[in-house]
Image 1: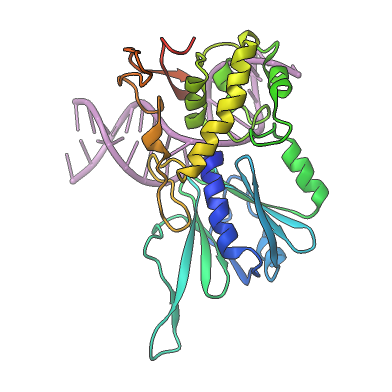
Image 2: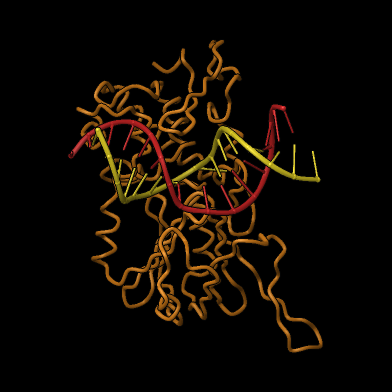
Amino acid sequence: MPELPEVEIVKRSLKNTIELRKIKKVDIKNRNLRFKIQKNFSKKIQNKLITNIRRYAKYIIIELENSWYLIIHLGMSGTLHLVKKKIKKNTNLSFYQVKNLPKKHNHIIMSFGSFQIIYNDPRRFGYFKLLNSKKSLNKFISKNGLEPFDKKFNFEYLRNKFKNREKNIKNILLDQKLISGIGNIYASEILFYSKINPFKKGKEISQISTLNILKYSKKVLKRAIKKGGSTIRDFKNIKSNSGTYQNEFKVYDRQYKKCLNRGCDSIIQKAMISNRSTYYCQKCQK
DNA sequence: CCGTTAACCTGAGAGC
DNA sequence: TGCTCTCAGGTTAACG
């Protein structure tokens, strides 16, 4: 589900709610996520202070005291929910408000006293991973390519990733080892703005096209963040609000519809590239 | 090393 | 109503 913009939206709201707070309790309902959560996971992070929250590509990085790092990847269907505690009048009982919380697949509950953060993930492609040093965090991040907002993400970097490559440009944009943070929606959108056919091989990408990808990868992702991400079916921020960038899609999910470029009368095509649907304008993207 | 495919999971929606 | 089929914002082991 979530690509860089959606993860950024989730990260921002987490920053507003749990940064500089202590994790009081962690309750694992189902440890079988993409990677199995170890038995001692809860014990290790309970009572630790969250010193900072940041993001790299599609990873949320929760920094804890004493150089511990909790990495959260939302996979395809992971969502985090903020659930507030209410005190029932005339009794000592307290309970957690569950208005927008899904009924099934709530796997991890992190308690902060007056509220909880709950991880829900029907498909269980997401994961929580704990790292215990700055070194292991750096190693983990460096296994990925640079994200478009990285200082070192420049023309030279992209040219080196494209040249001599047989792989088509759509798959290159999706390959997190080459470029990280872009997923299936934004790959199609970026290629449309860059006027590049998704089937074009990396080695055939011109200098002008490389510059366009450099420019529009940043521009499209930035704009999507500004609009709160894209909600196709179920992306929500932790307060259950949807994003609105889907209203600005140029090609994604627009098969049979007219190309939105002025003066173009072509119809948006859908093709499967490595089992992922890919949308483009045959006339505008060469 | 490079590139492609199948597999991991559940649920929604379409077609019959 | 129910069955079968396809598809979904991601990643990666296995294979040629």
